[in-house]
Image (cartoon, rainbow, N blue to C red):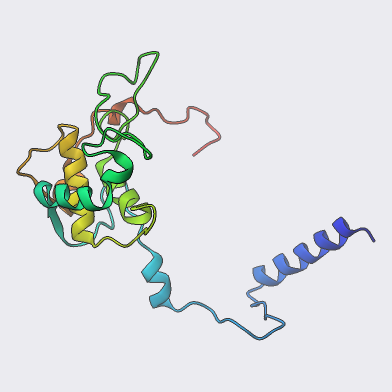
Length: 179
């Protein structure tokens, strides 16, 4: 038998075993199934409607401090970009020949900003910010884009209520076979 055929047969056998509810045992007898609590710890996704946003809040002023400490080295002091993407400005450029894609000009939903910051930032230590710090940085970035006032404090309800300028410019897939 050729190597591809052996790999293919092995894959089918493993697929059938998992479809029948059998758990594959490690030949080295290591590992265990994850507990419900462990799975819940990784279930941190936030929906575009704000579903699954955590408790807590953060102000623009606190966000400015956290941003200066954790974000400015890559994104610039005012979100103008640098090593990291530009975060502010660009409103009105999406339909032009040279669009500037920023949080304020391109992103359709504010809760996804929270989700991204919490999961991926700062790049050298993702998931290291507290929920309050993530709300604060989200507030600061939205303030840089003129979407919330300098005195704003965001929480789950107020963040989900923000209507981003580009929200209605995204279109769904028009193909009838794609749901």
